[in-house]
Length: 275
Image (tube, rainbow, N blue to C red; front, top):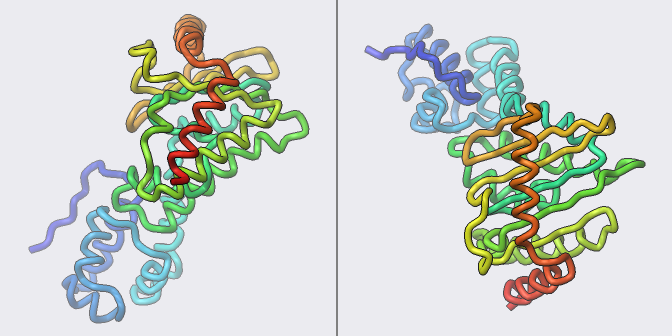
């Protein structure tokens, strides 16, 4: 007997998978029987979709909607699930980012989001998003790229980034992607509104080792911060917490190379990736 898990797993993939599983069981079908009815999809693939381990393709969702006669309900669930790919804290942050006059960013292991190329961002999301479909991955990348439109505003923010040298040293799966990413960093730094500094390895440990921080100064003069770790992030408004984060950023930036020396270091990395 097959049981339906009615637990609290509300991940995007799990929401859709749970509904597909219920529809299948209501028709008294096994996974193999359902696979035979909607030709082109293996029973193992459908099984992974049902338990939320893999995202369903748009084509599979359409086929399931047609087979179960659900009138596009599954497609709607998938669309809603896609919206939840962006965490709630990220939505607030993206809105604030569009209002900022000054953005100060620090990253300890990857290139900052606003300076990423599409291909580099895709590689990062692919390694983090186990089980997400290509459509969900594309949505994440598209959102990351849309954020970069802040530089296209009539009044773009001033952007100051401090990047740990580890972000330059750590290559992606495709060295060509890393080469293009470093080249893009150099191009971005040529913008008078953008400053990029590198924190070299020889500086040792520092307050924000292992994390990332964005400080936004809004038109109102208020400051908002986003602190991120491996799988979570927090938007910070508290004055006391903000003061501490600003101090962390200032101490970390004081250890970074001047902008001109940082450019030289980035050029050296570009030469390595061009070999």
